[in-house]
Image 1 (cartoon, rainbow, N blue to C red):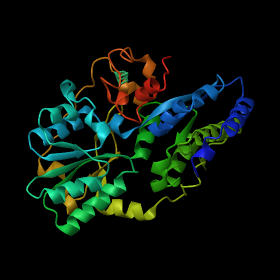
Image 2: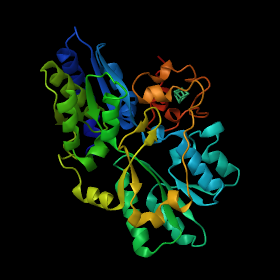
Image 3: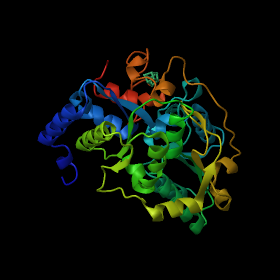
Image 4: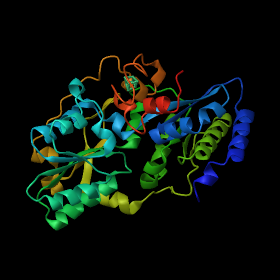
Length: 366
Ligand code: SF4
């Protein structure tokens, strides 16, 4: 298949592995953070980790939207479903993430709450149109990739005069998280593999601030194994040559300015919000979006007077440290014991982009 098979070619992978082994200077270590959970899964699914020399290591970042949502916001979603009696529409992964007291949306559904798994915000709109006597709330999560569809849905709902549809907005922003990791969280890595889908929207330009300010190379990469390996090689070359630049390995999709039309729609519907809390990072300045007043009628937080309270992660769960790049899943004493995908304790074991789920699924136990 075009753009898939050619990026999984074994001979090319071995060639890239040989180039990395040749160019990685034995006397130094290369610590490369892949921001996005999609990259983490590609690294383990295709054994990329095992093709790296000893001195080249990947650090897993916070780019998993399900993982970074704090427990307080999942408690809010439960409140909407159980106390306000809405039809709550959510992506599948969110249903299984434990909230306070290890409750989850899936448990609430089993106990009678009307929680529905959807594949897109369009499904939620359809449910709202088909149930005019019920309030329908879309549990919106995600980075810049999933924000434009939510914005379009809000515009559609407004244009149609849909009275029973609203959005519980939890959209977050990649550059703010990166900035927080490099400043407040004190992350110590040599280079970044930048997210691919996010960058298709925001472009490569926003990362220039990081290369100029923090002197860390950023290589935007696709999600196939050869993408990740080529990005690692490009980062190693930059480090060897003392460069810190934004390079774009994912030229088949990403441009410097991204998708301007999508960004314009997002700006029309959303604005920055202060003090949004991330799991593992705490309150990160300017790191999330809220619905503008001109769309207030479709803002579930306003419609149902939602107040978010911080809640602690489960005891012994190391998701916070993993999301900050400070620990690996196998450092958690619950990994594979008290916490598995069938019985997750933290969000990183639930999500299809979570680091703990990647380690478990692809059998990495050390
Ligand atoms: Fe949290 Fe489970 Fe991962 Fe441990 S293994 S950090 S408990 S999700």
